[in-house]
Image (tube, one colour):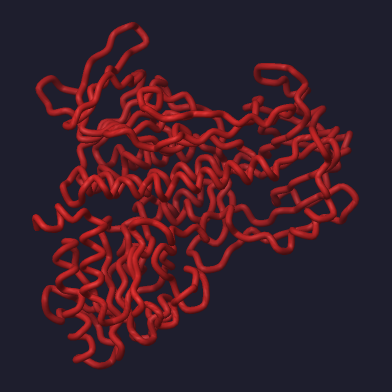
Length: 544
């Protein structure tokens, strides 16, 4: 940083996927950001190589080059389960109701490279070889010591600090929060990326999971023609990264395929399995995201995806606080929404993982359950119905009550917003939401009636002024003003109205991260305004 220039409004510590996403979300909202990483070069290796559907939606909403990103990976098409004593069970990985129905398989280093390029295009470069150690914080900001490997360093001031360093976090160490590891004792995970020959059953283009009395083995195709193998077996007591022969021997033992051979292997590593979730995600002006907030066993490919969604959730909220658009109480919703997600994943990982130690799971019941598995791992069903940001009125019972974001009548408060085609320059609802601000939609009771549209505009106008955004009345006609700074959004075929289950009219406030913050009836503008007072902080709202 040039001497004499002001310090960053936010210092992001860690330039992995989570830190980069946090920085991008802040910078594109006009926040002055500095991002540092202790490594002198980006971390190599494919590591977190599964990008689930919701993460792809998040990248889309962030304005990232998703199509180019998809082209650099391979689609996750099918998952074949091999349970000892049962025929293979093939499940399609595709999910309906999203522009990205299939997950993506791509090395973490490529995800980091894509995010780094995008952040650079926004004018911010990663500062490498700097370890950040918070020294003190006060009501105005945080003093941080940035140390270099040669013993040098500097003191800097930042308004806020976000720790996204991974499990070993100097930011978390500076916070008053618990960090208790829950080990999965007696087992370990061995991983390698390799080409292979032999008589492993099933289509090589599928992802596979083998469960036997010896443990578990998963495999996934990678863009370079190798496959990721990850094998859960009883702990041998060995330490350090395993030799390829150790991984191969474990793979043969678990699968019973003894002619299996690995070729051109790389990134072989050993993981001692544990879960840990920070007791708090915030201490004053220090915040945690990703593995600094929760370290999850890498057996269900949720760690990076959960961290990316942390960053997306936190970014717009922290930007609103920094820019004076909301009070600090908005940040309370970050932990309230994201920490239960991590706790739930940690519990599920510990309960369902099989690594060749302890009682053998009931394979018959697990096999039967495959036909009833949900889509929770994709991130698509995730909702925040109990969030302090989620509000609705009795007027919302227009057919949307108790419906999920992908279900019958349409999304209710806390649900994920479905994408939909728009007759507008944006072309899609995600493009409109992705501009980075709140989105206010009013569906008049009669979309063809100008008087009904005018009443809807009148309902939204005060709340729109409060939020500082343009309200949109969704009707049959093409765009134009309808009064009070409110615009129309053409929906001639009723697709948007159907997606939101608003056939009898509705008022919706959509969050910048693509969730419904409020759902009410067509005449619930006053209730919406009151909810915005709560969401943005009453003091801030009153000052407008």
